[in-house]
Amino acid sequence: MSLLRFCTSLFFLTTALLSRAAVTQKDFSGVGHIYVLNSSDWRTGSPKQKVGCLDNNGRFLAEKSLDDCGTFVRLDDYPWTLSSKEGNCTFNDETTATNTDSYYGKNDHAWTCNASYSAIIYDELFTVDGFPYPFLCSGDLNCYYDAKAVPGAGDVTPMWAFRWGSQQRGITPGHVMLQLMWSKLGDNKRENIDIPSPRVVLKDGMQVPLQGPQVKS
Ligand SMILES: *[C@@H]1O[C@H](CO)[C@@H](O)[C@H](O)[C@H]1NC(C)=O
Ligand SMILES: *[C@@H]1O[C@H](CO)[C@@H](O)[C@H](O)[C@H]1NC(C)=O
Ligand SMILES: *[C@@H]1O[C@H](CO)[C@@H](O)[C@H](O)[C@H]1NC(C)=O
Image (cartoon, rainbow, N blue to C red; front, side, top):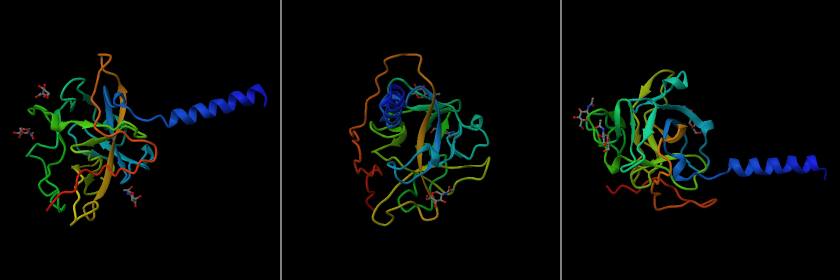
């Protein structure tokens, strides 16, 4: 093998390894956009399935340009929550729309960023070590989200957490199952931030559904 061929194959080997580099907690920090993916399986989910992003109000937007997407900052300290210029982001604002079509999500409120809201640890979104991309999960390892449909260009729609149980095992009938993905734009000012990991670490090919717990009816 010539030196050039050797270097070329080494280059491809390295990029193949790099492109498979697994996510760590540091990958979900700083400032970024949140992409919305049309995906119901984190093992195959990828940015190719992007159907929109979240806007500064926390709603699912089919953006015309990335400039229309919200810009979020993750706190580099407890409770590690997200905010936009509209305020702290939460699923617990009782003034937002509920997921009335859903069997188990009827009382769930849509995600929102609200100026008068003080975030608590239950508002934290987090990623999981070993993910292929920085997908965002909430609550008890619930890594999927629910919306009525993918909005038309320039439109917005509410986004809820995905819920399942024996009466409704999959996504709400007629709705679309989504994943969220962090698209980092910049780092925190502070270095050496230490964000605690959730209590699961994914290894290659691990069959973990990450759909959150079954809701008992
Ligand atoms: C979302 O993905 C599903 C499954 O791959 C596909 O059938 C559907 O057409 C997609 N919807 C949109 C709006 O991209
Ligand atoms: C923001 O949250 C507060 C407290 O939960 C609530 O009283 C208020 O109505 C919300 N504001 C908006 C604009 O939704
Ligand atoms: C947002 O939440 C953080 C964390 O609880 C809090 O320190 C901050 O004051 C909140 N911001 C507003 C505008 O309420």
